[in-house]
Image (cartoon, rainbow, N blue to C red; front, side, top):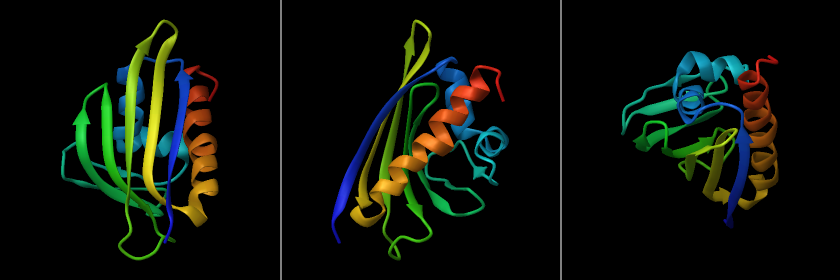
Length: 132
């Protein structure tokens, strides 16, 4: 199976703390994605999002700065996980988010890449700007 890397970035109109909490707090995560999220803020603990469609484990957590997780979608080959890294950098007008996801199955890469934009970055922008 061929794997690829997804790299994305965006500016979000909130503080790194707000953005970190949106990812790592179950209620906030569910609110902006529209799907149930069960997330612990402990390294080594499991998480699931989108009503169980995506799951994985927390590998490294630096509050308000960095999130590293194993991550898989339920339609991926059994036992296959990618690794995602989210870096949060304070910027003059909010937070610069840098995202990398390695080992994404090539046949799913296009939809996964678009999903991050449609279900994460854009809704987060709206929530942080007070428009949703």
